Structures are given as structure tokens and as C-alpha cells.
Image (cartoon, rainbow, N blue to C red; front, side, top):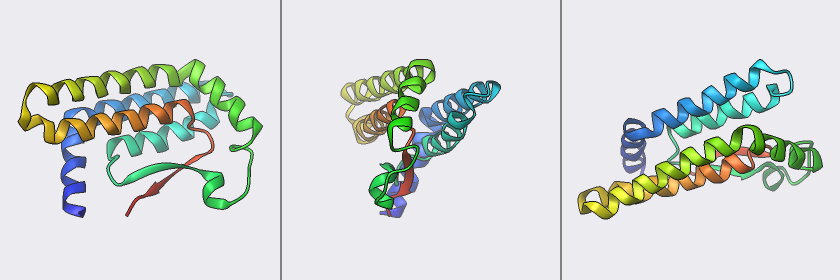
Length: 143
């Protein structure tokens, strides 16, 4: 299974994952400019790294892993996610949704692309979901 994951990650990186990863890092740089955005910037860089190589990684609520609530999984986390989505996350979500539609459309056009296009679309939708609620999430390996 590791060979397929590596192959999909390399294909993903070449066919657009690199661009969306850079978009996350750009969002992180924009967040770092303001003092309020610094906590968001760290999440942008971590999720940006996941965006470069998404196959074999998943975002999970930190409370599920640790068994207890913290500042990012409680009320402040929810408030932070709302502010995040209104200022930055919305644009990243649009980028991932457009890429998901493009991947799914490409799969419908040629059967050779179907093998790669549909998993790519699912990865973009997974990342689009993460743009809505990045605070309180942690990235884990699915191995």
C-alpha cells in the first residue's frame, strides 16, 4: 500500500497539490503579518505541508485523540474557526472545491484519468472541509 500512496502523492504534487500547498503557505504568510493572525499562521504551515502530500494523512479533532478539551477544541476554538473562515478559509475552500471539480471533470472525460482524478477530488474535498475548521485539528498518519 505504501507504493500506491507514494505514487498518488507524487502525482498529486505534480498535478496541482504543489499550487494548493503554496496557497496555504501564502495564507500563513498573510496571517503572520498581523498579530492576531499568528496562531492561524502555524496551522496554515502545518496544513500546507499536509496539502503537499495528503495521501496517508488525515485531520482529526484533537479532543478525540487526547480525550479532553483544550483552548482550540472549546469555545475559543469555535470562535477562532469562524474568524479564520471569514478572513482566509473561505478563499482556500473555493480553491480546493474548484480543484475537486476539475479533478472529477477530468475523470469523466477520459477513463485513463479516472484512476487518478477521483481520489484527487476526494483529497481536495477533505482539504476544503479542513479550511472550515482547522483550529482544534491535528494531522495524523493513517498508516
